[in-house]
Length: 285
Ligand SMILES: [Zn+2]
Image (tube, rainbow, N blue to C red; front, side):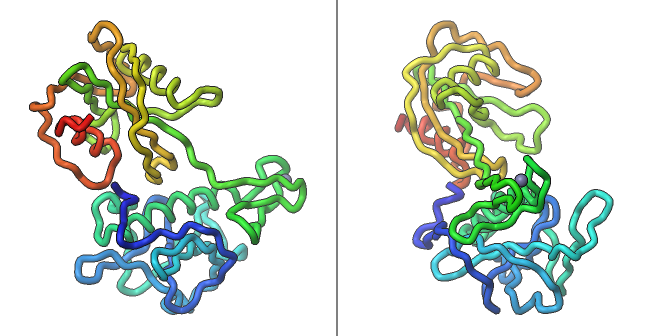
């Protein structure tokens, strides 16, 4: 899966650090990231290439001994009418859609990129206190923003969500999303609502999207999925009752039962959804 970058090690402990010349700097503009390619592999700029800009930096994480920082324009920068920061331009670099992180090499560089984009969105959306409107300030001990005015504390937002492999003997239910760029078969999925457990999310989402009852809900694995700012929790469960699908056409374009032998997908080594489908295909679950 996308977070599996072994033998490299992702170090997520927070540090109150400033970048050095050779540290990697992540620069985003909306849903794009500043990159170049070197021998087919993704590269981010390092601090020494950004000397002409006056920027502020947030330490993100390290992978092995390499440190990654997020660049943010300083407060004096003029924003455009949409509130966007000006675009930073560097010779040899260009802005690439963040969806490239699903497929780009090296895999640890791609994982760093999408994880940084998740944090970028959080920093962007919490520049001002949602309670009193004052400018938020970064804490120095943990990854937290606080309001000097009213002491409001804001932590990175991670939305829990479930992925559900609904089994019916030797068949699994696969579906396609309506109106999304991702067009391969997937599993039923949805965000956990306030006031419910992950297992209750499974039951509710399955009923809402395909009109089925399920039982024997069992946890499989989880995955950070920064593309949607979520922590995905994978569950398998068994059909409980009739197998007639009632499709929620707002969410899905199609849903159907597939026998193990009918599945012709391969593991993409990126998504938990795909791994769960492959496990079923191989008869492991
Ligand atoms: Zn406040």
